[in-house]
Image (cartoon, rainbow, N blue to C red; front, side, top):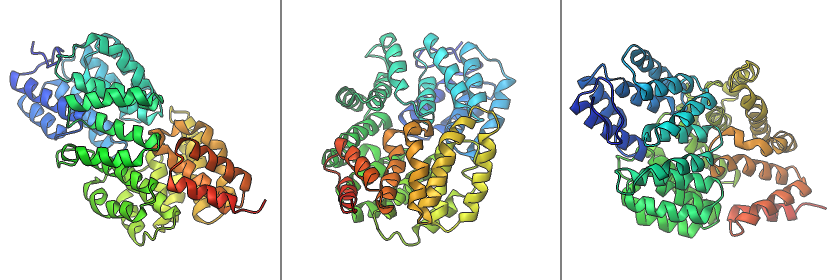
Length: 440
């Protein structure tokens, strides 16, 4: 039986199919290259090779998008009827959960599987992203730490594993070690998404925007190529550094240029534009008709069932794009999901509904109501999913709402909290000035 580059047997494969699958795995885990095209090539040359179908299905399942989930289900149906070894059965079981948005169950399958197969890069990538959607990126630290002793530094893709570990360290707050590990990973895998992304996160969380822009500039030849499948998110991070420095026009120029040029019509991609435009809007920047364009792109890519993180970002665009009726419709589905007893129900109930209610109140100028909805929800905001940097848009909104509502005690508290980690942030200093100007 043919084996892949990490030594896993691949059922019903040809030598050509395995070589192509290895290339697809590299593209998938580096987020650099056309993994879908490569998996399609493998499916064509070995149509009864289950891993070719399962690998492609993971890309669709992890897109946080109802349209993509629909495209993934036929791939699972095909794989289900093929010969599957134990590893492939584990992937199918996890995908059955993930494609329906049951991320906790999918991650549990992969977590157990990786204890037996610590070299399974596809499983590591899928589990890492599922952790992110669950708001538990720090678990990537522990899962990678379990696996790395089984790896040799001489093995191909060892740098990919270091990249996973580095990001888990960052989300766990171990910034110094995360930066060291991720810089090493970037040397080993210069085109890899994870190590570059992680160092950007470290600099964002530590309040080092100038260092962040320097890091972006030094490595731009690696992350800004057309082959980079998620460069829109890197451009988003670069824009955030400009926002932190008070360079709002520069951030808006990045939105108008590379963010719009590199985003895809997928939930996981469009969140970048919503989060950036919402921040700039609250800062008083004239965003003009940009919301209209973005709201149109969001149509059919948030359904109130699959992913609360993307739903909340879709709401931002719909509200500011004048589509309040669409928000009401989405909110009705979210309420149904919150009560349906599925794995997603508590997240929609505890975080999704208050977040949307807070955004609606903020949009209509009822800032006291926005505070009322967002303040209690913030303590479990991790359940929303995403990274610390991504979830911050709601804390940002809460702080601005408190200032506009004239709630001096809340506004001062939140502003000082933000300045405690990022004292040089221009928006944070703006929040503090606004809070201090309120009457005692």
